[in-house]
Length: 221
Image (cartoon, rainbow, N blue to C red; front, side, top):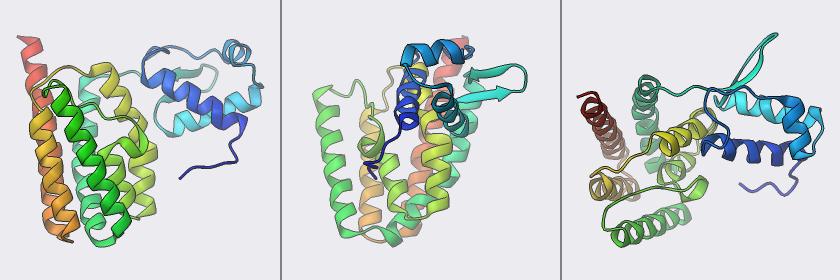
């Protein structure tokens, strides 16, 4: 997964992606190409290539004669993403049960143990997963070995979901239940039970969505 031939555009993409996801570049804000090119000390061509990739990841929108703008966030859009994830990640879990390698199963089990230790150390106060291979869901999607599904979830939706996690995240009581649900999914995948893995993954994401809906309702009271 690591590309040793990283380009300037790759590095600019990584820098801007992190800044957008973590809110350093605010949601809804306009992107000034001259200002960014000067600040990052890169050419406008490299910057435009990076912005094009950000657009493909749904982090940036571009309109003719207006330019690029960071995507705006809303609770309604977040719930839409959860509905899509429920279907697609359920499929990914089913395919992972069929296609995962022994090495990937071991890596997934080790990742789950690491997450268990972190949640226990925090006494269940949080379960915040870092990006890429340190993200449980990302790892399962990769283990599906379905390139189209990987592109949809790990490119089109993944960074946008991380942006919501950072900027809409709040403390909930889901850490320990979510960890248990992850464990059940891993067991089903390791057993090669695709039907059960899909059912468990869909239920897991549905519970997370309903938890968010309940928090939204509480905020409106």
